[in-house]
Image (cartoon, rainbow, N blue to C red; front, side, top):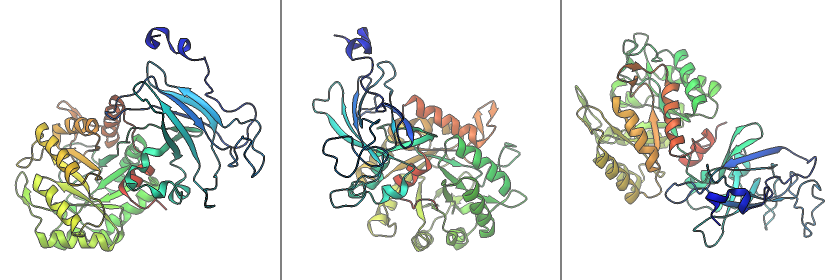
Length: 445
């Protein structure tokens, strides 16, 4: 029987058990949607998921349950088939309560799944956890045993609205928005945020559009760049208030100051800061990052628990970052960003991009990576990054236009463009909770 011809109702019963509720249930009623993908990122449109879970009180509707009486209106078992056209599955349930592990520790709320599809000879088992249960997840006896903790977000369903969760098996894409930079001015694009208030408003819009990291420089009133810690402090305070949970990344770039002045904001303990580990040519000057300054910046980041984002303008910068990680100057698995399209530095070139990706995977297989394209190369590099399983940077710092004839109306507009790319490549956009988990960052207060 050909399911593409017969249709799902000719293959399975109309309802395989996509709701586990038989009446008025206890607890929070939720709906979960998502897709199942293969190792190449393709959506499996004939997937079937069997689901079993505890009720809202952490009790199972089963003869062996001795801890209490489970909700009689909740079965705790269901089955959902993917739509043969879109690959989307959906089921209605309740948010499960916490269940004790064999040693008595409480597990985080979770749903167990068994997945089958064409080409899968043996059903695959997995779990669905919830990204809004950060504290419970952090002490879950199963999640904490996972060796590669940056993979944990692949087990987290993202809360998209009240009562709605999205669970895709594809790795979420972190979107970083570089809001201002040191070079563009309002003469280039009036939408460029320069004052702290403008930066806060612009970042909030980008956060709402899907960005989970903000990369920030600060400016003086005359639009010249500065490393003034007081301005960074005001920006950080406002971001924590208006964009709660968003990953805050400060720039230590050389246009904003000289020498150790470039790290003057690190005692503010942002979540991340950029770290250039080597020198290279810029359009009109040399971007100097001497070894002693690089080591000092790295030491300050270690001191204040700031995660570096390695800005690789050249292949040698990847190798230097790996060397610093191996000898402990960078304490955690490095997060590496390829910067392409700066005049006199590395151009936007696909074979070079592919070499960068292969090099990172070979040297640090567990590392997360990102790529930034400057000017007209921004959209091209965004597309390459999302397609290759990396993360994407966008924003008015890198590019002030949507195309050669149209100025970008906002940072949010550029973020939405990356969101569209993610949708085309069937990759979910990372929530701030997922971004923090993947990058090994502390959860927001």
